[in-house]
Length: 235
Image (cartoon, rainbow, N blue to C red):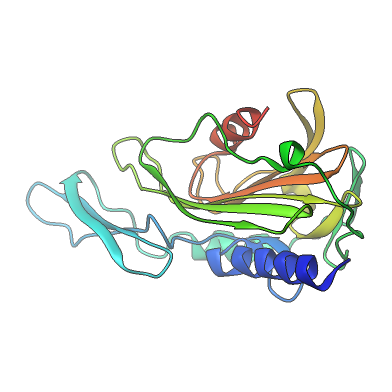
């Protein structure tokens, strides 16, 4: 693997950790939960209870603040779920031809066509904005989005990352066995990592095996079904 791609893969894994999956750390893609961009915070109950929150950009600046009628959730309700999740056995194996595990290094790269590395989905959730794009020559392309929270629609919101890179279909993944399963994206074999809750809290991922390498979508704060829909729109 070239030093350039190695740095990009390391940065991608690091991004996952910052975003909060457990998608990374020193180990790589990990799966915990984070409420960063699109953070929902509970308000103090009072007459005509409200749920208040803030949408935060990746740099932690406030995009918007809001309060709507509703019952505030208990603060830190997710911590027991996170701790239980972290204590479970981690996935370490091959699924649909994709080698994944806590100590797996990305495979050696080779040049892929610009068309193969194109990563512009035709579908994105409402109120999603592109933050930046990084191109690694003929080896990789990465795009970072922010999905705003939607309290009425029960969407937590958060970062969405799309990463395509050439090379052997393998990468670091730190996720519990029970949250990883085989799948298919428009006929392409895939590995699916569901979030901490069915409602989309926590980090999720769709990892697709390609002729040239892998397409990886990782998000925090949206359902796996929504992430699959985004992945399918790449084809």
